[in-house]
Length: 293
Image 1: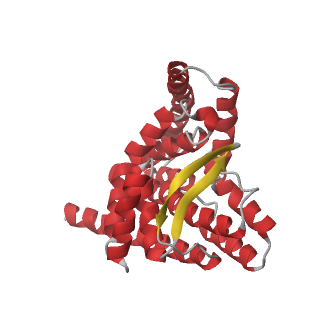
Image 2 (image 1 turned 45 degrees about the vertical axis):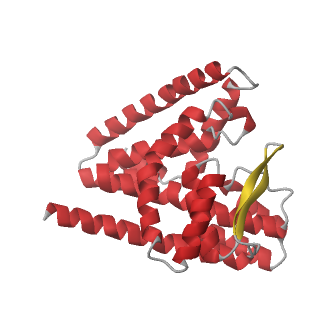
């Protein structure tokens, strides 16, 4: 059973997102009252998390070594969908003028509709999605693993998956997803703030900070605005603007400077986030070691 779990758990969180999203659509198939949507969301979270928690607890009691339990949990929590492969595919497709392939590679990583995006729109969506996927797929689980161990990482990952499954950005889940969005904002607060402190050691700090703090005011979710604004300032580009979610057009204020994103900014954003996450985790490890000493 342990061997089976090791092979089954390193699955992309997108698989569970799709499954839970289908369940949510079965429950909220039309617009309902706010209180009904929130109550349904809380009950569905309970019905999903309790059986999963029991399975994890049973697995913990079955494995012979605790280190094996940690490894399997981390294989599940850390997103192995390949952000580097994703960024490279979108970048190469745009450089070759193959927008259809770029949209295919982009689609699993964003909620917005990609069918109407231009080459510039694809590059902008990719640059915006990379930091958020780095944070939700890597840094949040790793941060809470360092702080609370494997169970903390697993709990944080479940919150991330449920938030993606019932995102309030989707018109159908505008009320249904608010409870999960609140949980996600709570679990991401300390990791994002800590990562932002690491950002302060980078280049173009003054311009990036100015863009970041301006986007905090303009973006509906200030933590997301903080990260996106910083990336826009560092890359000297503009982000934000209109996008379409399930046929509904939503306009976000523009963030950053005047230059529109190009394919090269996708790779640069990947490298910036990769290095920043690595340095942040290194700081945590050093801090933990110093504390234990």
